Amino acid sequence: MHPPIILLVSANPLTRSLLDQVLQHSQAGIVTASTAGDGLRRLRDSLEVSIVVCDESGGFISSEPLVSEARRRHPPVPVIVLADHGSVKHAVEAIRKGAFDYLVKPVAGEDLRTAVGRALQSVAGPLTSLAAPISAFDQLVSRSAQIQLVKQLAQEVALSDATVLITGESGTGKELLARAIHFASHRSRGPLVALNCAGIPENLLEAELFGYQRGAFTDAKQSKLGRFQLAEGGTLFLDEIGEMSPSAQAKLLRVLEDRTVDPLGDTISHKINIRIVAATNEDLPAHVKSGRFRLDLYYRLNVYQLRIPPLRERPEDIEPILLSFLDHIRRDQGCRISGISKPALEILQRHDWPGNVRELHNVVEWLTITCKDELIRTEHLPPSLHGTMPGSRSQDEYQPSLLAFGLSLQEMEKRLLQEALQKAGGNVSEASRLLKMTRNTLRYRMAKHHLC
Image 1: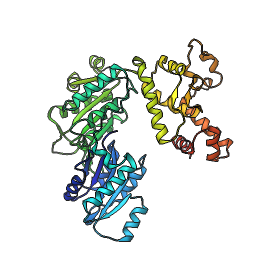
Image 2: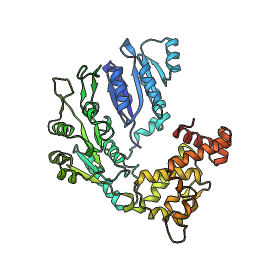
Image 3: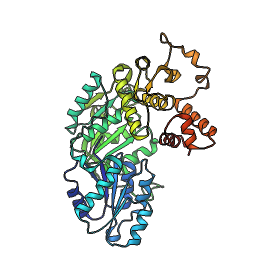
């Protein structure tokens, strides 16, 4: 668990002071925005916003677009509205549109503390629990000496402002480690902003990173802050850094050298105070040799490197990670599975895990549908995991039933749900009985596959 982040949208700096006093004994962080537009951008771009406090007093800001955006998040983000008049009609309308709470200014500190505590409890447990020390690395479940060493080194570098480069195969948990470093650092009260360099077209990447002024290009109808400025006072996580274009690499190098950014169309350079954590699943030294990645940028990023070993190199971690996934599913959705048999565990430990922890998570989700017992046995495992182990059936024996269709675990899960719903005539209760799972678990699966 990491400390919650509160997004405060207010044109009044005194509101920030009040919120600081309310949270002075907790580990909650505050991200601020002075306009509704900036608030929307921060809500969309920040990874970990837990709740929103929107100050409508003075008539400068409307909570409606923020409430609308917060309700679209999964799970929804609660919004507390502060207003300077006590209109019952206005309060009812705000609540009807989805606001979590409505307070009239001037707001007593105790009233705001209670409202914030209730909102945080709805998403992350009681506010009082925030005062207790929380390890940002608790989510990195492990028994292996390799991961324990990675966590130890990460905890040490978190105390500095050094740029960190995290390497490792896809699905090993690089983003999770980046989050842990942020929340264990002195920047934990600031924002954690992420950008997947491979997920944004090359012609848009620089605009996302540096932002732009209105009129900077044809479609720039309003100014937009870039990820560098959105991460002010916090951490910017650049995932898949090896996919960055040569032009963006050159500009990123300058940012790392002098800590200034030049938004597109702006004539003024802006100083920034952020930490950079980058990650890649590629061989950057090889890319440097081939000319795909700048050598000077590589040295700037590789100040402190942390490598997360693939799951196949640490099979002793499979059981604790699997049990951790099951624990979360039991708590959030309802699940009867409590453990795994030794033969089934041996099968998992011999698997190559090309998708690493992400693949293991998919297998656990598959098991919550196929396993009707409290203990996972070999017959419950996906056919693709059985291989040709001694004493087990060969993969070819399983192929005619499922693998011949060439379906992924997600596709097979969806078809299983569709078949149960069809047999139940669309009755969710009957379908959950057929699948031997709770209604809540079934509804979660249906929403995941857009079946409701």
